[in-house]
Image (cartoon, rainbow, N blue to C red; front, side, top):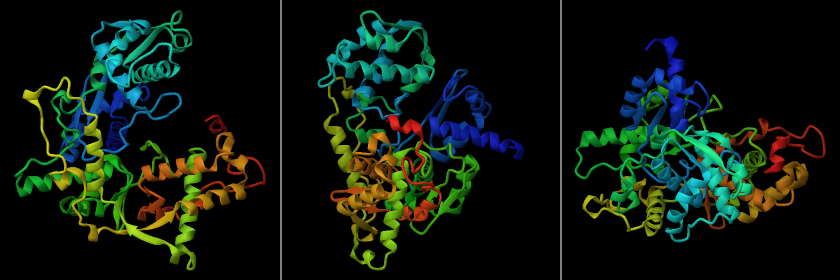
Length: 461
């Protein structure tokens, strides 16, 4: 590859890693052309580096990932409000795609709902009622999501008309079956799974030493590209060795064009573009984002205070093996047995291999992390409200400091900067890199309303 072409190739790689599906209109026009130009090179590199499969056609590109553990990074967001899909929306999305697969080249929303209703009503605790506002809103969010990705195109009417009056309003959609098929494409048929662990990528029992090393190297690259930060203590020994190899950083940097930052506790890929992430931090992301940064600054002050830091407890970091096994068991409790093809069932041992679920590190080898109690966190948020004034935290949060604190902590947990535990949080080492975050956050330039200069659009959320 010529050096002059490298930035174009890296841009295409970032597009696929960030969006997974690229079409003629999603995430923006001409994005598909950027990817298809490098389709052959990307197909080989994604397969060799991560074990991913890139499938392309003239109208879409789809990256099929192999996952090592369940987390919230693969969630879908609504197009308009940018809120995560709940279980109802996810279920409706699967049912709608199944209905579209049985349709021809176009369908009305009224007809689609007619097909959807009996399937939804056959599922316990799901159902569909056209007179229920929550059910109709969920359908609208699903249809908007499919339109946004180019699977559907509105040729007449609107989903809003149908939502206001489903007897009179309607919408007509043209269906792109090729894109619909690409959107739902699991690595294994779901009817063949006896446990959710079958969706995870695990080495075969009895795999030789060299293949296991190659698998560990692929897993290490996947962790670096998919997670905000990777801690060595969270990994099995073979993966931790691969994470420390200098070739890993070279491979990822060449693919993405982004630098890799390494510390004693772990490693992370730094997004210097500001566009290769689904959660920008720090940044102008509204009240929750800014408050999360300010909370981190106060936690850093607490840790560096020679008097107050002595009162901080240090607790064992959570065992990812146990957390993953607990999550898998809860998922499997809801696994339906109806429709499973017993003769073709793929059976996997839940909890049988430490590599299937995360760390193989014994409890006495895990790090001890500072524990900040909930009462201390509540005192921090109250101090911020006193310093900046309640009106600085927008209409939504000016009377709800507790709710804003909960949202900020959830964001920090998603970024693997803190870990939520009963009664407070554990502070991960990567939080220390933001100890001077107040230097890049807007400070009050005048007293009074909106001293933090939050975006105005945040006031409506």
